[in-house]
Image (cartoon, rainbow, N blue to C red):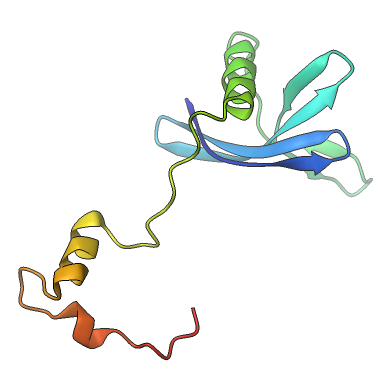
Length: 118
């Protein structure tokens, strides 16, 4: 189990949104909340027709402490920021784009369009 993404801020008592990966599955929508006894992890939830929120993910009582510890440690730890995404280009493709060609002879620089606004 590991945190794959975390968005921090202050929204009332809410301090962060985060996702975790467990055995190849990514579970989205966890929250870190400031409670009267400190920070705790809130499960992903969905609003029902009556306006109440129901958890959509359940964690057993043996796993919950490790999830809380892992998420709060990640939230508090600024020494290990999340790795930045490469924008969809692999390291190999990036290096090849700098040289202007790849192993198959395709010239990436010739295909670049400088008129794209992003």
